[in-house]
Image 1 (cartoon, helix red, strand yellow):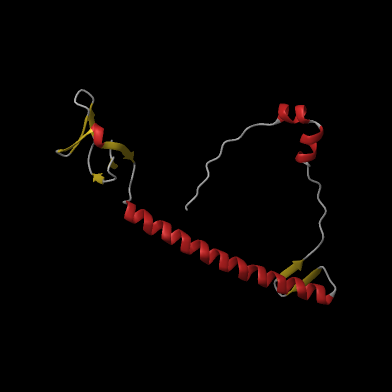
Image 2: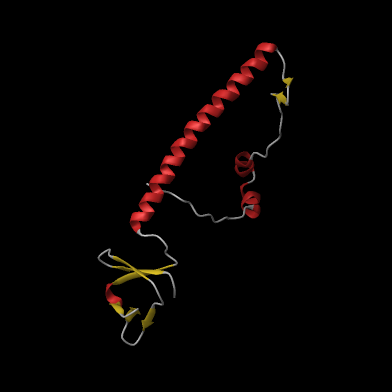
Length: 140
């Protein structure tokens, strides 16, 4: 196994460069002359390329980017509101400018009310419901 980290039950992590082997008879992990008894190894992190310090830096970067994205979304919403207000002030739902055609029209769509269907036809709803599995990414 290449590109691994050894994490001990005390929380220590050792980056290992080279091949990690496990001697089942002795219950010991080996890499480049170093060894760790299996009872102190919490897990072998396969494919790990970052230390926890690097990972914390990346999480901080992600949080800063999300703050910037929220600020940009606020600016986008404000710009859209100004344009919509101008269309309203002109009493139009479509406007052409140099290079752009701007529309703000009412659109009617039809959506399936699964909550009402489930309430009325619970057995049929269960028959045609399909469970799905997703992974939720969360940083707290």
